[in-house]
Image (cartoon, rainbow, N blue to C red; front, side, top):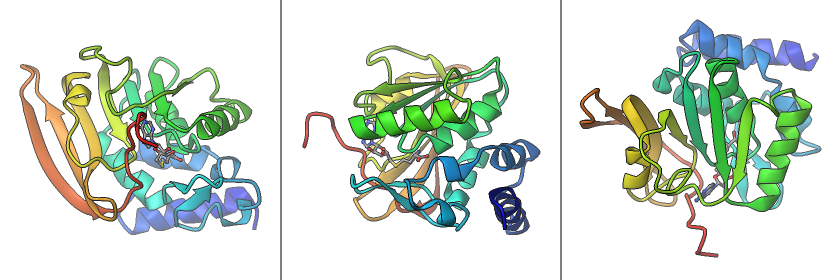
Length: 219
Ligand code: SAH
């Protein structure tokens, strides 16, 4: 079975399971070639619904169902400006680029230099190089640090012990942020809404398991 057929089968399964709901997420997942984002040698597992290791850094590319859940909860629309914290392989950033379209903007921030490089190369070979800006820095305070209300959506793909205020501040009125909150092994997915008056609401969703959000000054 070729990659395209494997991709179609996986998307059909996630749809049948009720994980992929919207036509936009379905189309994005049918479009982005996950085999181009996995670590060399793991291409044959690209369409198994599981997280895969990326390099020897102990980081992982999230399982396709997890990525689909996050994208559905974020309700990303064409033209939006989206921040991702934790670029990893660049796969989720490419999906977000599909969702915001050519008039939107994706900024993705990655702490580990080797992964920022890996993601940049994956995104450029798949044609997303101009559509996603990969920044090598600590994203726990957002990007740029201290800037206020610039993002329609924020997607954090590493687990945080608490909800960083700096990230909430970077969300525009009407914005949505999704992040795993909790300890090193298990977290709850938390969705933050900021209303048009700037008031913030929090919704606690499923149990999840992400690698920890690390601080750049801690080795
Ligand atoms: N979204 C990725 C998977 C992310 S795994 C994908 O689609 O492949 C989580 C990533 O968060 C790892 O690459 C890890 O290095 C990164 N990370 C951890 N702490 C971070 C921080 N403070 N700032 C930016 N990236 C961070």
